[in-house]
Length: 176
Image (tube, rainbow, N blue to C red; front, top):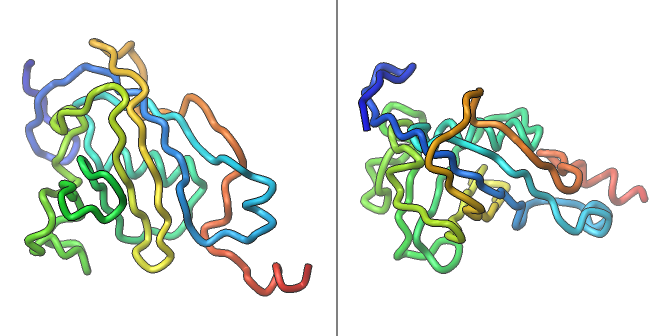
C-alpha cells in the first residue's frame, strides 16, 4: 500500500478497500409516537479503508440530519455499550472537552483510519453521539471489497426508516 497525503496534512496508508457499514440507531431521546411508527432507523454507508473515523462521523451526522455538533466516540471490540474491554476512539487534545488525555481512550478519530481497525465482515462496533442525550448506534460491517470503485466516499447507499429529530420537543408530545 502506497502512502498518500490526506487533506488534513497527515500521511496515511493508501487503503483502497471499500467497507460497507450499516449504522443502526440503537437508542436515544425519541418520543413514544416516533418509536412506534419507526421500528428501525438505519443508514448504509460506504467508506474507504484510508478514510478516518472522523470522516465516518461526518457521514453519520449528515445521514441522520443532525445540526448541532457534540462530542462522540467509537467503541470497538466490546460485547456491549461502555464495555471496559472495548477500544475507545474519541477527539484528541486540542478539542474543547475532548478528554483524550483519559487513559481509557485508545486513539484520536482524526487520524485513525477505518482500515487500521482490523475489522472483518459481520463485526459490530458502537458509536455514541452527544454524551448528554446519549444517541447510541450499532455499526455492522456488511462487506469489505478489495478495491473501491471510483467515486466520492463516504456515501450513503441505503436508508431505512425516518430520522428522529436531534432535539425532541417533549412539550409537543404532551399535547398529543
